[in-house]
Amino acid sequence: MLPTMGEALRKRLQQTRFRSPYHEAMLNLMVAALHVRDQMEQACREHEITEPQYNVLRILRGAGPAGHPRREIARRMISRAPDLTRLIDRLASRGLVERKRGEADRRHSVTRITKKGLKLLEDLQPTIDALDEAFAARLAPRDARELSRICELLYGDPESEGR
Image (tube, rainbow, N blue to C red; front, side, top):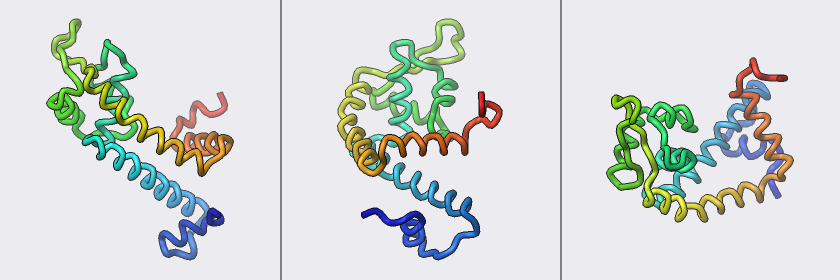
């Protein structure tokens, strides 16, 4: 049986009271995000990549053969990579991505995923699927949609609300 609301956080933080329901919710969100990130990082570590590298590979897989320039990869990242150029360099040194100078503007390069990068993502997919299944075992689809809605209230553009 799952703990009642607030009980798991109180036990985890060894704290009996919170300043407000908002403070408790923020702490809960931070703990949950770290929990999910830790699981993702462990899955990536098993395949000798980091979570940001996995994110870049997924972005480039979605880009197809056209690839993306660095600024577009940065724009699509889940979390900001402080040195995306070095991250891409590490992926390139392992043969997971390739970089070519842009046709239209030689000052910029375009990064594409390689067959080896696609194979790594394919090999990692069963582990990612298991994480998704573990998440699904704890949340009903309705709750997952509600969680997404609430998260988007926190980080979404307030100007676009209600459109």
